[in-house]
Every structure is written in C-alpha cells, then in structure tokens.
Image 1 (cartoon, rainbow, N blue to C red):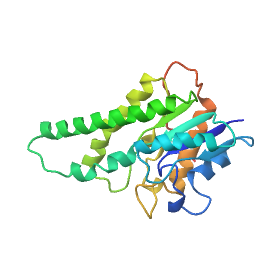
Image 2 (image 1 turned 90 degrees about the horizontal axis):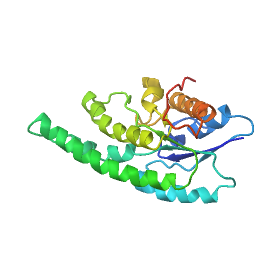
Image 3 (image 1 turned 120 degrees about the horizontal axis):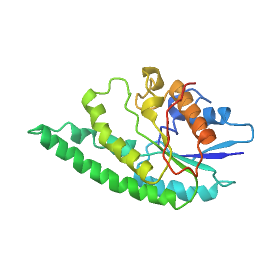
Length: 216
C-alpha cells in the first residue's frame, strides 16, 4: 500500500476548474491500487513560502506519507509576469533581469526544499508547465530559467522529477474557465504520471529520473 500526498498549488488543487470528481486527487485515487491512498494538502494560489504550513499539516493526516509529490513555484513566477513586460535597452539587460529573478527563485525554492527534505520521506518535484494555450512564446522562454532551478535541485538531491511540460502538452490539457489550470483531461494525465512515478521509482536510487508519461 502507498499513501501519496500532493503538496503545492492549483496544479493539484484544481477542483474549482473541472467537473465534480474530475480533479487531480480524485483521478489519482482512481488509478492507484485498491489499498493505496491519495491525500491533498496543495492549495490553489499557494506560493513557495506557503509550503512550510502545508508540510506542518502532514501531522494532521491519519497515516504517514509514503510519497510527497510537490508542484510549487508557478505562482511565484506568475507574480513576475507584469515585470516581464517592462521595456529594456538590450537583450543582455533582459537576461540580467531574468538572472536576478532566477537567483531569488532559487533561494526561495531551496528554502522550501529543505523543509520538505527534513521529513525524510520519498519526494518528487514537479516542473512548471509551459503549454498554456495562448502563452506568448517569449514568456514560455522566460519560464526556462525557473525550471532549470527545479531540475538542478532535483539532480543535486537525487530526486525524481514529474515534468509537467511533457505531461500537459496539448491545449485540451488546460481548463476552459482558467487556462493556467489543468483541465479534466490534463488532471487525468497528471494523475497517471504520478501513479507511474510512485510505482516505478526506487526512492533509494542514487540518480534522478524524469517522468512525463501522463497519457490517460
């Protein structure tokens, strides 16, 4: 039996954006084994700093987690979108701004990750997806430095990665009522990818494996 706990933001807490019973937690529960359990501590709108509170709530669950799966950081980057529209004088100046934002994101992500690692529970990190319909190609490119932080931290700590850029790659994977949230289709893909990860990955393996096979 496995108890999988979902932490982070609306990538996992997407119930308000899909029909009843089609959210990520419900879909994950349906594809896990009969004795397995999926719990949701993720909250719509959460940022990296909110993860301390979510981790504290692990103590409220009736049974210990066997896996923690975390999707966090997307809302921190979303908060920078306005600043990303600012005019600059050169490509180098723009790259310098991205580098400064990436550095701050790295600092905050590492703080969040250290809290999670202190639990000594198998842990998987999710990237920030970039297939949102209508997303400006420049903004899609600007997401890459932040995903680079997540991937580097995963490799540094030998953690598996759920690459949501590969899982949610079609327009139909995003909700009609809010294009930045997973749709029922996208939620099903995410659930299948999580189930694949927790079934296949050896938490003691001294390497990082990237999972992206979320076909539902």
